[in-house]
Image 1 (tube, rainbow, N blue to C red):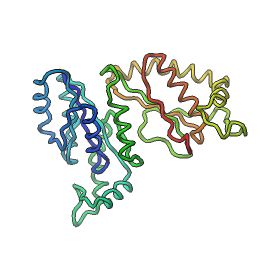
Image 2 (cartoon, helix red, strand yellow):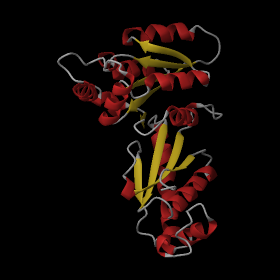
Image 3 (tube, rainbow, N blue to C red):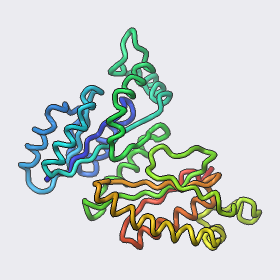
Image 4 (cartoon, rainbow, N blue to C red):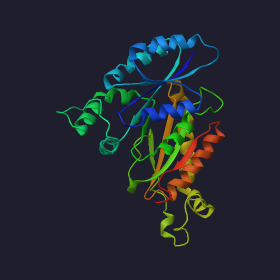
Length: 283
């Protein structure tokens, strides 16, 4: 059976770039794929030798709206199928279209680029809701997107392993958009108020010790162990391919970083291989 990834999302959000990055990883990629031909392409791919990783970039918004039904049919046939949705803010997409002078597929003499983007966003709302993974490229350059695609889709030894990400962040910089669970650790004592610890981060041993040795932190980590011991098998049983857990404190530099690192270590002990990233550590 094939490993199939449908790449959907807003025009200008990076679908073709993601496809190029997947091709570099050894995936067989078909760009601007008509939805009506997906079943036929998969059928032809099955006649090849060995396991095939197939990435199909669905084209126009009207073409993408039927993706949910196609996914259901392919999964019924026994294939592993995932949907990757590329998103970006309206203001960023307007800027990109202005810079490239390309025409948005839904724009016209009567419809501005911004109006076309908003219409497309509305058309794809259900598709986005059904996606296994959403990547917001608003603040990503091509190299950062390539890095994310590599981390998510490069071979890790087993095709059925759910990919886990633990991300620290600061509430004052906004909650990450593309996460599944958000945990707030602002209840813990803040190293920021210690003059010796303020210049450091949660990656430094002094800050890590300060945070993790708090009785509340010890109890919190213990309860997180029990929570994810229940959730991860349940998510996997439901076919979830990705799980992103965001850990937030005020600035995203001390408490959330230390807790995210500790949770990442716990996942490793459970036999998982999580990505641990710190969005706001340098702010």
